[in-house]
Image: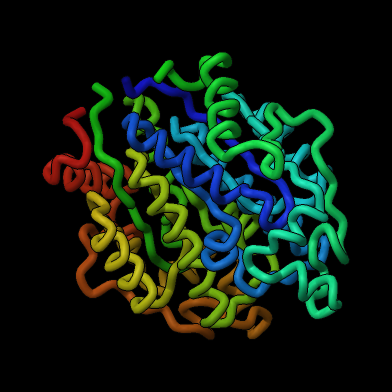
Length: 184
Length: 184
């Protein structure tokens, strides 16, 4: 069963909210089904596409637009393009969705990795929230920089209140219902 | 007949040497055969991936590496990725070839669009050579900046001494012989 469409699966959410974990599990699932999939992770993209860009709003938007351009190139060639950058600003996410729609992209599926800042700061896997709260990191999304949650995400993953597997299953269910992927 | 492999068709050559013309004709030919193809043109890539980069050696190399990264993503998903940036430095072209090979890319086909500077300056379609020779453009490849021709290109297109169709045919012949594309 290797039938699927080319589309964009766009994760957004704060640092530590589970974007990369969810994206990697889904990429593995798709690979195991023989699907064509590419994961454009935030850090990897910064290395290959956006070295030298800062975390100012303008540079973040530039970075996110570049990810969007590559994701569109892949999706229109039949690939499932998964992105997992914070992508904090609603306007640029919506812009990418609009361009993808206008170009005839099968789907722009926005997945909101949602968790309260308090929960993220308490877990603080990478120790970044502690530093940000102490003022040691400038432009830290959710602390010293805005995070604008999506108003109409296709799927929300409540990563502090449900298991990762529950989130993964809900995303797979949505994609199957939309006939973007075949039934497992 | 829509059988083809995913590979990189990398044009290199000076401004006006015919890279974009050849790349566009080949992209059209592939599309008419129902192939998956993407053309990463130098100017388009500068807009989407590399706005703000200068024409210093370091920034040119960064730009070319980004094109290489996107081309590899596409090629490994079965797409014919055609690039048409000047890409003046041999070292970074060879680096991209080596990474593509190491990743198992089917082929990195380097096509040298070859024409003497004198011929390009005489034709001077965009009027750039005149300005460069007058010192009005800094870092102009072939005049005030180096161009390092490939030592072992898979194909050379002698764009000042043969017709565009002859060059196109030679490239198609090479790709067919290598079984990267099916016979027309």
